[in-house]
Image (tube, rainbow, N blue to C red; front, side, top):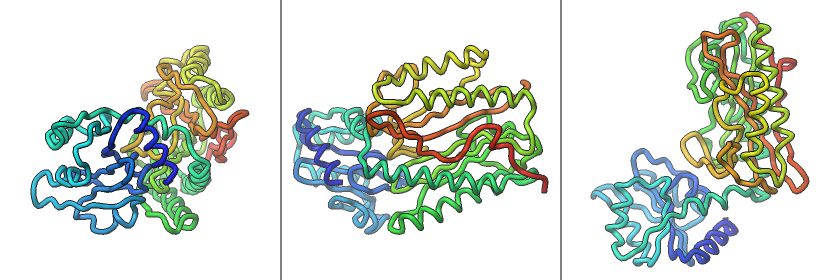
Length: 381
C-alpha cells in the first residue's frame, strides 16, 4: 500500500494535481484496502501529498477505519449532502482536484464543483487505470492463489453435475468450496462477493446470465463460471461442458472454439498488441464460417475488479485496443461463440484461462482442463 500511494503521489506531481478524490470501489480498494458497501451512499478516498483519508457513512460504524490503510472520517446522513461537507473538511481548496469521470455522476460532480468553486476539477481515471494494469509481485501471488481456488470451485461444480440437478445446486457447491478455501488460505480477509454462474442449455447463450432453477438435461451444453473474490481481487475459471454426451455438431463447434483458445494462449507474450491478437483469432473463426457468432473480446485484465466495478478497459484483447503487453500484466484468454437456439449445435461455447506475462513469454496459471476429452461429464440421477 505504501508503494501504491507513493506511485500515485508521483503521478499527481507529474500532472500538477494537488489532491485526488476517489469515489470508485476499485480505486478506494486499490489505494486504501477498503472495499465499501454503497447501499445508495457515497464513499471516498482523499489523497494529497501528505495524507490519505477514507470518507465513510455512519451506518458502517468502525469497519471502514479498521480496514483502511489511511485515516478515516465518518459522516452522518442526518443532513443532505454531508458527504461533501466531509470532503470540504479534508481539502482546503486545492488548486487542481483529480476525480474519476468514469465513476462520478453528473449530479455529484456539480455538487463537488459547488463545494470547491475556485478549484479546477480534472479527470484522473485513465492515468490511475494505467497504474493498476501492471501488477506487483504481491498482486500476482494473490491472483495465482485465486486461480488455484477457481480450479477448486470448478472441480466441485463438475462433481455436482448430473441430469436432473438444478443449476443453483451446482452453483452452490462451487461457491461453497471456494469460500471455504479462501477462508483457509487467507484467514484475515473479509469473505464477500465470491460467486458462481452455472448455466445449462439455452441459458448458456449469455456469458453473464444468472443462475436459475432450470434442471440439467442429458445432452445439455453447460457453462461453468467460477469467481473467487479475495480482498477485492477477481479471478475466474470458465469452461464449456456437456452432460452425458454431445452431438456431432456440438463437438465440431466446441473443437473450433478450443482451437481458437489454444492459439490465443500461444499469442499472449510481451511486445504484442492487444488488437493484433484479436485480429489473428478472428481469422480462425472466419475460416470456419463462425466469426459472426463471436460474442465479445478475447480477454481482459485482472486485478481489483468484479462484475460491478473496476474494468481495466485499456487492457482488453479487442480490435480497438492498441495497448502493448508487458511483463507483470495479467490477462485472460476467453474466446466465445454463441449459436442461437434455433440452430443445430445451439448454445454458448467459452473457455477461459488466466496468464501472467513475463519477460520471456507468458505463464498459464489456470489448471482446470478444457475440451471434449475432459469435460463431457455427469450422470443420470
